[in-house]
Length: 369
Image (cartoon, rainbow, N blue to C red; front, side, top):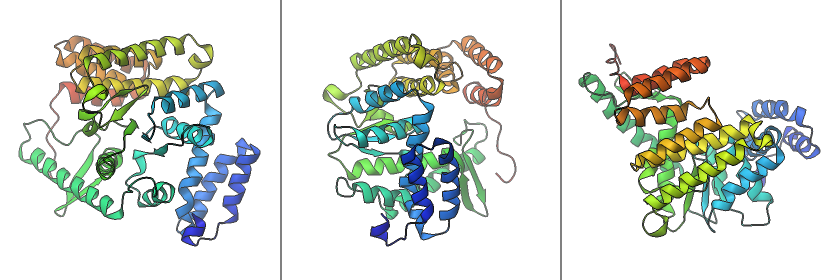
């Protein structure tokens, strides 16, 4: 990348990779943070993405039991069909397949992350890596996604202001406001909405490629044509044997039942919070997908498996509470959230936000909002 962009590689970059090669784990985080500060505001910041990918792989290698890291990476990569593009969202879901696909003797899959699509420098990095293998996203694609989100957010905000007695279209956690007739937005929800638009654009630009996704946050706009695929999900899985049918929903549930039993009976896995949280998150993502296709019984069980793996997983409790409430079991839903808040006091505020979203009409926006 430095040669292509005619950038001198700072000595700090060399020191960082030397520390990784030498296995000086206690130095790497400090070197990475200092390196980011050193590169900020310089042309060399364009080199940050391969640096952070190396740093991320190191973090997962340190955090996970070695065999469990290999098992998870192989479960993800083993689910992919030849030629599939893999899009990883969580840190383990991104860094572990990145590490293993580059070091394995099998196919070197295209590995991306949806979390960084809104970052123009990341799009430049992807074009450097994969420009010869797929149609890349462009700055114009990025600009269009930002404009589309801004327009959509304006309409939803105007609805909430004009019709305060109707359900709000700007959900909790989405930071959108109007300042001098201009829509201002920020925060995780807005960024992920833009990233989702860019993922859809990338798929449109590569109509002959198959895509698989490991979510960070739910990308519900992809659910209509998605289906479970091992611990992750296949996108654009329309028609034929790849579609999300009742049989495939049952097989997904069987997968999570067996995986949950295996992990909880394995001392190495059951003593690794990183391992359990990652599988719990992925089980929740598939439960969300199943619920969106009205496979509610299967989704309910998948949420329960996710909670067994990680009792502090609010995503699983939120999804299950919503299913319970929609099916008329509101007392069970409330009790579930009460129990979660009592057992996880650090997440009490987030659990209350879930309660508001499911059970209560949110207050109308105040003046100037």
